[in-house]
Length: 47
Image 1 (cartoon, rainbow, N blue to C red):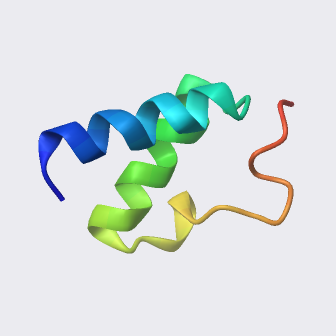
Image 2 (cartoon, rainbow, N blue to C red):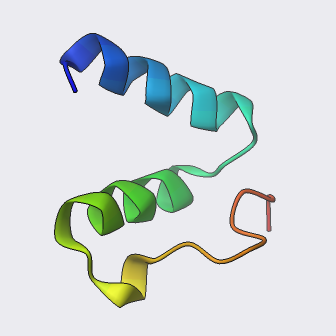
């Protein structure tokens, strides 16, 4: 994934209502695979 695609992904998640922490945790999960960052079913909903 190039930087343009990453930027579009981040902007899309913001537009979907994700918080900065949710976005950061999701990116950490993608990169590390660590379960503590794994999204849940209601993850995209603002808490």
